[in-house]
Structures are given as C-alpha cells and as structure tokens.
Image (cartoon, rainbow, N blue to C red; front, side):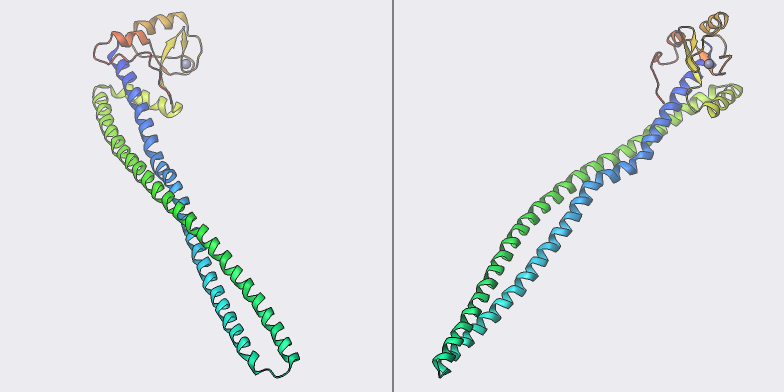
Length: 252
Ligand SMILES: [Zn+2]
C-alpha cells in the first residue's frame, strides 16, 4: 500500500480520536456542575428546614410568654375574690375567671400544637442533614473521578499529539495540505474506504476502472464526485507498519 495513503488513514484515525477527547474534555465542567446539583438542592432544603425550625421555636417562646401572662392574670383575679362585698359582684367575678380559664386552655392547646410541629420539623431536619451528608459524599467521589478523568484525557491528548507529529514528519507536505483542505470542507471523514464499489463518503458508485486502481493502493486517488481520498480497507491489513484496525467503524 502507498505509504502516504496509509499514513493519511492513520492520521485521520488520530484526528477523530483527538476530536472525541477534546469533546469529552469540553463537557467535563458541565458534568461536574451536574454532579453538584443534588448537593445544591439538599443544601437549599436544609436551609429552608433550619429556618422553619427557628421560626417554630420563636413562635413557641412567644406563645409560652402569652400563657404565663394569662396565668398571672388568673391568679390576680382569684386573689380579688376575697375583696368582693356583694354576691352579685362575686358571681360576675367568677364568670370573668371562667372566661380567663377558657382563654388559658386555648393558649395551652396552642403551645402543645406548636411543640408537636416543632418535633416533626426537628425530625425532618435530621433527615435532611443525613441527605446533605450523603449528597456531599457522592459529589466528592464523583468530582474526584471526573478530575482524574480530566488528567487522563490530558495525558491521552499529549500522547495523541506526539503520534500525530510522528506521522506529520513522514507525510509529504502536498499530501497533508490536500488532507487539511478536504477536512476544512467536510469537517468529518475525508479519507474513506470503498465498499461494494461505492465511495463511503458520498455513497456514489465509482467507475470500475477507478475501483481497480484504488484496490491496487499504490497511489492517492480521489472520488470523482466528492473528492475525498479513497482507500481499500483490506490493503491496510497488508501494511505491516500499521496496526491492523481496518474495518473499524469510526463515528464522528
Ligand atoms: Zn465520494
């Protein structure tokens, strides 16, 4: 096989891998952000529940204060009973005490309900605290994994660039410039195999004579329709200096 052609096939393979690695690298910050979102949500929930617990505690203090004021008021009313002269005054005062007692009961009931609500919220707070701790653990682990992936990708890219350089050193300048021009036109595959007599770039059937020439693999031939550089996959396997990865489908 023409060495320039096999170098081009290999270069394209490296370019595609490079493209895919860079794409993964670009998406990493987004993936870290996504991994953080359950923790952010749990933290937000924790803030809300903590605020609710504090609000209930304040409400309880204020209601307990109301209750003790009312209790003191009832004691005063009871103390005055002995000072009353007439039966009518006495009866009226008893009625006032009864009303005050009813209000006291209502206040007690209110305090109890607040205490119950407070207990429920405290329980909820404990649950949310556990959730936050778990989310934190998960995020720390995932972040570490993604950060290690960042350095793995960087190392792979460096290695890839060295392989690309090695190929470029062997590639004729004119061949490389033909390759880059095609690449800037098509963005995707520009060195394509022939399968069932058709160019795998544009899928059009090639003239039989061109097909035979491409199979011989001794020169760089372009598709007459899309101008991509053509090669015969089986020929790649015969070329000893390259890994035999022919037939591997590379996806953009
Ligand atoms: Zn074509």
